[in-house]
Image (cartoon, rainbow, N blue to C red; front, side):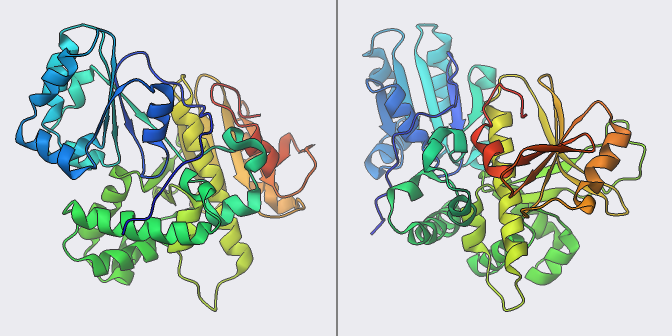
Length: 389
């Protein structure tokens, strides 16, 4: 039996467009809850329900009759739109009638829409993404250590056993959902791939090495990474190369979308060093916050990392109209001179950037023009449409 997954009714910082829009994102981030809380009187069509889904698969035009019975400027919420892509043609026609109907189309699998040749309504609906909670949304419920261990998926806050919820989530979604969509024929090597990728979390990926460890072709690894990205299970960030004076690395960095999902996927080994695991979890937690900040902020920003071929690195570079920041994450309570090396090198190439070091201490201070901020403080104050520091 599928476990009940409910969500905490916490006000999200996501700013909803006035026009129709797609709301993509991983399962469990609260897309349906967000739509129902903001539009309690909307017409809701839940395509996760067999009866609803089969009805519209058989006759997508039934949607017209439902919408025509509504007043103008009504809102229609359709959950998991990728399960019946044919509905998009009907929605396209209804939007063009210009009666003010607003469609909110949620989905966790943009890949299927792309695969079926859907044009996402030709620009008549915006594309938005909902992420796990940001610290600023849950305020005093945010505990850094717990977030590093169990992540910030809304569903885990409704449970007294977050680890069990994460295990159920991975079993029901990351494995069964992918299999149900027909994306992977043989799940055994794919599960092995997921575990292998957990060792690449917060790291520059080497597809050749991953291919060898998973015992599958390199092209298969590339395809599976694309599946993870298109189902919002993971993301990659590219190297920042704007007028760089140095020879830089060319491979992207890889992250799972939630630190709790990463920790649950990551097999434990006797060789594991706890500080390294925590360091990767902390960097991933910062990464998922920066991705959410980028996607929720109205001005367009890009998120990168910076790494020279000699190994000098800055974890994150955020560039856009609001500002230009270089951010390094350290899982330590004190700051050593070598902790500042990457940011100092970056400032030599980009003196106009603001350099930030996030660490586990509790004092905000400045060292060599680098602002050092306690990580928990930074995350709790990270708010869309506002500068990072």
